[in-house]
Length: 88
Image (cartoon, rainbow, N blue to C red; front, side, top):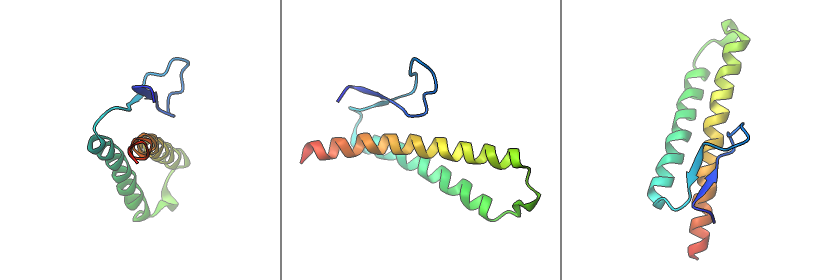
């Protein structure tokens, strides 16, 4: 595995966001967990609101932010999983 893996959210020709694949396992886990927690909190807040008054653009922006955070977390978890499986 390369020392850095481009994240899925790179929407440019030259990736600028990377996962440090050799980072300590607890750091990888913490990074993924913080993104999953942020999405969870965002969705819990959204679920408690009356979104019938929300603008479509606002809901779309929240959905895009949640998707980006989830993709980032999944990218980091992918590296974490590969590292753990390599140890076995």
